[in-house]
Image (cartoon, rainbow, N blue to C red; front, side, top):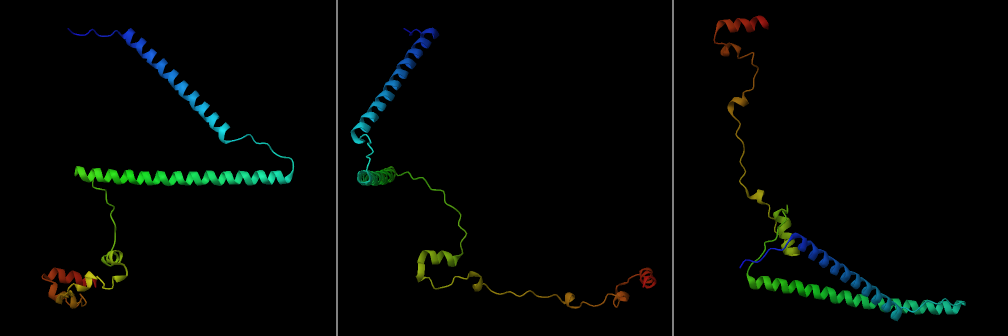
Length: 175
């Protein structure tokens, strides 16, 4: 048999009930957190009574400084534990990836570096040989054509270049 579909009125009623229950639970958690905070403050932080004379005030300052030092030491210890735990988690993640055999290739940055700089970075102070790649290339000299060598005045060769008499006359009249 096919199950009957729930009516929209019933759905809305159940949603509102769930929201009311969730809201009540959130309020209860907030109230408990506030109570825990107040209880902790009462246990660890005594009420401050400021003494009248200077020596009592200095003694109170010393006492507060000692408490601050203790809290800072605890905070430092907790930070170190957290860093150690995160490093261990990262190492375990890497081990799991190794066991799976799937690797994500990291995106590599393009680095503009000459061969000398790369060898110096890899070998450090041991690098003494220069890798000048252009120095090993064969030197090729450009041949100058004979026509370019004969750069002479064009007026001298005008008779040779003028094929028709008409052109020769035009050049003579202009000059």
